Structures are given as C-alpha cells and as structure tokens.
Image (cartoon, rainbow, N blue to C red; front, side, top):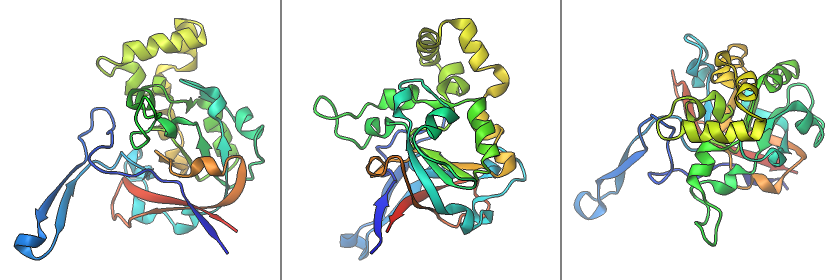
Amino acid sequence: MVKLYDLSQPLNQEAPFWPLYPPFEVKFIKRKAEHGVNAQYIMTPNHMGTHLDAPLHFVTGGKSIDQIPLTQLYGPGVIVDVSEVGDLGIITPEVIESKVKVRDGDIVLLYTGFSKYAWYQKPKPEGTADEERYMHLHPGGTRPLVEWLLKKKIKLWGVDAVSTDHPMNLPIGRFLPRVHERVRALAEKKFGGREAVEKLFPPEDYQLTHNALFPFDCIHIENLGGEIDKLLNTRTTIGCFPWLFKGGEAAFCRVVAFEE
C-alpha cells in the first residue's frame, strides 16, 4: 500500500508574504445564515505558501504553469538533508552528493531545516516559529549549484525556504529597507568580510537560481514543509500539483511524496 507524505505548508492570511509584494487576503462574501451558503473571496500574489514557479516568472514568453507537462512534475526523486549549512549557508553539490545518489533527471527536494521556523509552527518560547529568521537568513544556492543542476538534467527542484536563492542574491540582502544592512553584516561575518561576500555574490548573480535556470526549463518549488523531515536522504516518488493556471507565471501547489 502506498503511503502519502504531504510536503506542503498551509496558507492563509497569517502567512508571511514575499518582501515588496502584497499580502494574502480572504473574506466571506456570503454567509449561510443570510445567503444559504458560505462563500469566500481571495486576493493574493502567487509567491507565498508552497508554490511552483514557471519559466514565465523570469522569462518573457516562457512556459506558463498550464504548459508544464505533468511528466515534469511527477516522478522519481530524492529528499536531501542540507541543514548542516546553517543560517545564510551556501548549498553546494558536494553537500547534496554526500547524502544521497542523485540520478540524471531526478526531482530534487532540499531540506534546509528552515521549515521548522515557518509561520505555522508552534510559536516561541515552547516552539520554533521565527518569521524573521525564516525570511531573512535561509540558505541558498550559488553558481556551482546552478551548474550542477543543469549538468544533472534536473527539471524540478525545491527547498523548504522562502527562496531557492541565497538572501545575498535577493532584495533581502541587497536593498530591502531596514533589513539588508543587517543581513549583509551577518553575511560578511560568516564569509570573512566584504570582499569575500562580493566575490560569492556578484551583482550579475542577482536572483541567480531564477535567471540562470528558467531559460532551460529547470524550475523550482519554494516554501516546502509539512512532513518533509520524515523522508530525509531517501529516494522516493514525488509529485507537485499546481492548479491548471492558464498563463500563470506561478501557482500554489500541493507537493506529495509517495512511499511504497
């Protein structure tokens, strides 16, 4: 019998939204007592909660959500524990390959450990939820990871973090008001100073994992979570199921692992 593992985060108006984007909004437009039915209306950006980015997100004229074949979104893959890289860590091919054998064309899901800081977790002091840490200090990939993903012919990958990109390749570490100076200072402390940070994260690598991979139809899922920590360093069958959003540059999705 197949056992299903939900690798998704919940989503509602409490969920944090991507910096400089509008929030998720929901309201009742009908109530049972008055209208005989309960009905809701939502208004939201695509880039919050567990979601799939289509090439169109960074490639004008690229594939939209409805043009991504289901065969790209379902199949054999691995869930890899890369949490050892820590806050602002760099996810490298060496870390991934030290944990599990990745085959060409696999779906690759990376467990950074940051889902334990996500908004839906139990709050402090008893719990681990930490919205600022989740949004500002997550690990990410740099150019060696991008080159490895292309070499391995990976067409779908994902992380249990707000972005696949490192904060220093995002508004978070570059120009986000109130935030970027603190994040940059922490990065310089971690990597050995300003010159080291500038070498690791040059201006041309802004949003690197999006800009460098989407033209090759190597797409990703962000904000994984749920039961992802139950299948670390394992080979499994993975499915990512967005709604059939015609013309969509991204879409909320449910991500599931299927274990025999």
